[in-house]
Amino acid sequence: DHGHVHKHTHGSHAHRNLHAVCHIIDHGELTPNAKDIAKRIFRIVAEAEAKVHGKSIDEVHFHEVGALDSIIDIVGAAVCLDYLGVKEVAVSPLSEGSGFVTCQHGRLPVPVPATAEIAAQYNMALHITDSHNEMVTPTGIAIAAALKTRDGLPPNMTIANIGSGAG
Image 1 (cartoon, one colour):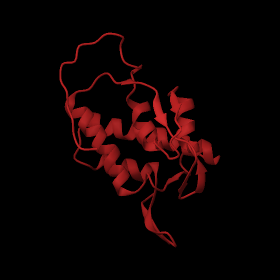
Image 2 (tube, rainbow, N blue to C red):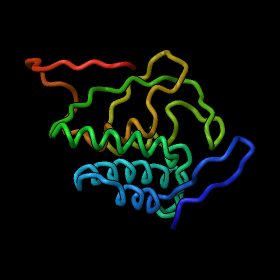
Image 3 (cartoon, one colour):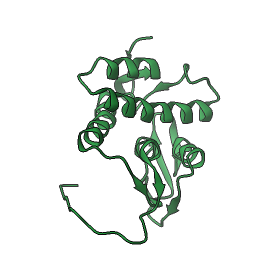
Image 4 (tube, rainbow, N blue to C red):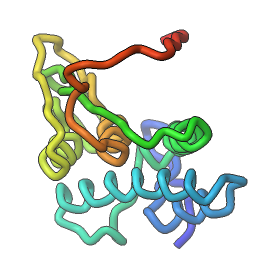
């Protein structure tokens, strides 16, 4: 029930379960809504990983997504959405690559099993492209699934503001 670190030939990284990640989130200086959003995103990833690995949600240990940078990514998204007061999120089909990716679990097909599971469970449309790489990660699709209130953009809309940034 606590985060711990293992040494492997590929370096050391944190292996945390959902309880440990939620503990970190709960003890952060966040609004209750931002905490709820972040925990909902992690739960989606945990449910997918549990199904893919044939384990209970409590037995799942996050590898890449349990690392501190992934916690910051997910919590950062939750904080931004909470701060901006976002109430509706339209998600169009997500463009995904093909081929294989190497991760903690070895060489996996793209979309990786957790991404495919989240897409199926949350009715997230994937548009498979000719790009031979991973374009939709489990973290990314979990964020989209947790926040989605509708599929696609409305047929008519007026642009009120535009934001742009690096990346």
